[in-house]
Amino acid sequence: MLVTSEATSPRTTPEDTVDGAFAPMIQIDMEIADFLSAWPHCDYLSTYMARMVSHNRSDSVLHSTLFSSALNELLELSFRMRRLSGSLVCRVSRRDTVERVELTFPCAQEDRQLCEEAVAHSKAKEAQDRYLNSLSEDLVPSSAMMLRELAINYDAVLRIKADDGDTITLIADLPLEGLAN
Amino acid sequence: MTAFRLSPAFAAQYDDNNQEFSISGSFRPQSIDELAQSIGLLKDSLSKARGVFHLNVKRLVQMNNTAFHGFARVIVDTCRARPDLKFVVVTSSVVGWATRKFSRLSQIEPTITVEEYDSAFYPGQSFLEEGGFIPILRTQTKLTWRHERLLLPGHGMRPGVTMADICCGIGDFAVLVQKEFQPSRIVALDHSKSSLAYARRMCSEFDIHGIEYTYGDAAAMLLPDEQFDLVTCRHSLQIFDRPELILKELYRICKPGGRVYITNEKNSHCLGEPRAESIQWTYTEVAKLFEHFDMDVELGPKSRRYLAEAGFDDIRVESFMVTNLDGDPQDFADVIAAWEAVYAGEMAVQRGDSPEFIERFRQGFQDHIFAALHPKGYAGWPIWIASGRKPS
Image 1 (tube, rainbow over the protein chains, first blue to last red):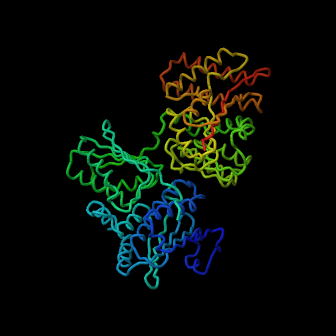
Image 2 (cartoon, rainbow over the protein chains, first blue to last red):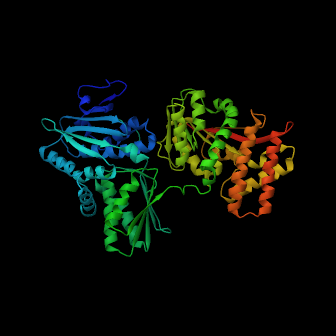
Image 3 (cartoon, each protein chain N blue to C red):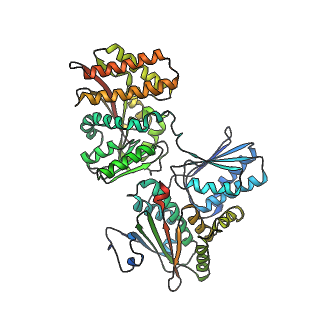
């Protein structure tokens, strides 16, 4: 596993400038097979990254709890994709009160379509109805429900970046500083 | 990959007397099957309940959607099968995500209501943390700091320590510590949003960085285990109705080999000359007044016992006297005037004391001020400081 923090990485790269003022904070690169070797990795990674990212927020502990909660759902989603080759890359950057999580992971075509559909509907008015319906009817939460939940309960703005091959990059902008206060 | 930390243990329990099902800690299962035991307990509890059923999630730090879904389904299904049963979900604003998430359930079933537990943390303390008292807290810290800065190194303070100041109030102690001792990290926690807002504003105005002010309940903090070399908690155990719960948490977040530092008063030992008798009577009554509101401002000399019973060793206790000779006597007098306003003006009135009592009660404070400002007078306010080491 490779962890790169703001202090040791360049402030900006040509790729960073695509999204303007988002400043990189921390990035974790990990073989997907290592990541999938134990379920608690989702918990460890989300807790660790939340602490690193939140220390200079106005309420570090509250922000860390919220960030860990949201990031854990994204990591669990990538864990459930169960693709055994490739890499997991989790990158966090910040602009003002928003943290951006970019999570790249291997993903089958059908799973990718499900994610794209869920993200597309996360902004729609019926997203909350769909979420509540899933909560009261489904036996287990689906990936789509987890993504909708991020939009509804954490005000996350979600999108998917086009990757080549069989990887997907989920981007979640999390305005948690506002939620935490 | 090694574990970064163990999550706080998950626990589920049912209190039959209050029909309250409590879940606490952190729970992020991979499969809903891992919930079987807790879900079984919830279903069993529900089968016995009548009227109002409480779901207490105040101490639930983390719960993933898999677990949330499992509990939510049982609650929603029960609402549909048992329209006679009402659900009250009790959340905490400290946790951040819980109120929003559980509130979705009330959008599905109107018999579910969500209550955010917040200001009712510790009834009685509201007397001491409203805006008007803030300037006097700064003066109090100014008066005690001249003593504490000399004593703190004997209780584990040194440059580079990781430190938590629990019940930090307006955060001025953390600022003084940062300037004097340069800890590598300071987390300052309080449950008064107005005090924390003041602390953050002061840091911003004075361009002070590196103090992590955080909102939390000292009796159930979200801070992880064994994180700090030094944990301080000043003038606070004495105003909690159950100080042992706070000490348990201070112990938990302290590293093995680290120290917990507490300061408390014994109000009945406040003194002054001249007019000693009147002063002593009033401060003895102060102790009784606080006792009425379940606070023990006589706790100072009991610090050793509290620390020992909480499991600390190498316990060190000492005391110092803040006096009118510590700098400007007017500072001392201002503190006493603020005490009079709160104790005689608010607390005694709320207790229902007679005007005659309040008049005599006020006189003792006035005599203490008189002693403080008298050119030959002496006025004192004793503080007990104590620390204990968490065994390695």
